[in-house]
Length: 252
Image (cartoon, rainbow, N blue to C red; front, side, top):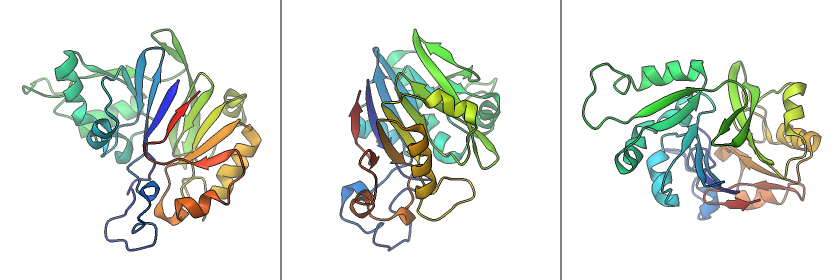
């Protein structure tokens, strides 16, 4: 299985508009972060998790040839705003894109992209096939384990595929959901910044959860510029924990 980080930044990305901090003005490309998303290649499938405002740029930069499914973690704009651009794949492959989303997220998509789901279809509109995401399921015989947790009070879905799990925009998770994350080779986990936050894990909170779950390796994503410089923060982490960056490719 191959996992490509399409974006590793929080809702504003890095650099942040108008900001002149040392992270936003860094010359290290690892400090430049589009909105968080990953592309997973496994068993002949191409799966993308989340499609934020940078979706078009990410698809071009990573040369994603096809998409079998897009999994949506939750309905915030930095995770769904780019879905209009799935039409490039519609045009190429003459089929709608399967979008896996909870009923709550589907309602948000119907509001945000009302023209897509209108009874009066305009020529050239994106085509989305909404598939209800609730419990564990199979995608063409590939088992997908769904992880439930909270982004403050908002329900969010994470995903385990084989021995890799992806959890973004997380603040709290129950024991029964943690049990689904045993014996991981790779855990991808969001960590917003060093200071505490109402709806996101801080760096220390993320490290505590990683220690509890004990994956072989963990990668931090959905970072804000308040986390600090990639190279400096990397030196502060345990040996099995790494800061992800845009374009990083993992194979397991």
